[in-house]
Length: 174
Image (cartoon, rainbow, N blue to C red; front, top):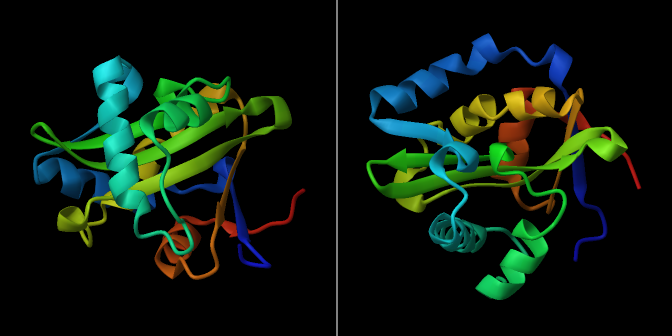
């Protein structure tokens, strides 16, 4: 584990969605549909597909180590009070799950938390991460909070840069 994780926070009230709508439109124009797990159906089959996508995308996270088994993933990520299928955005290219942006509900402590944003390698460099995060921004409002937090390994420059581009700033919390 690194000595110093990069902690970032976004003020939802100052987020300029119009600046990033072009990423959502570009994905839609390319036939990629953005949908939440709630809209898609939070079924065991879709939870398994989410797991497989998350596992594949997590392989590129610096220092990640071995990924959970499905049972561990279900216990730690889905079968928990902070999981809300309305906070999980999936990017679909026809029936292919090509990206995810999962945000958990931590409203009891005043924020929601970006758990994971990932895109399959064949779909990278198209702005899909920004599109999914922009599309999913309404989840924070749905939860009635004005802050979104996330944390990254310091070597994960791509994710840190993408979040800073969206307006996330360095933050400290325990």
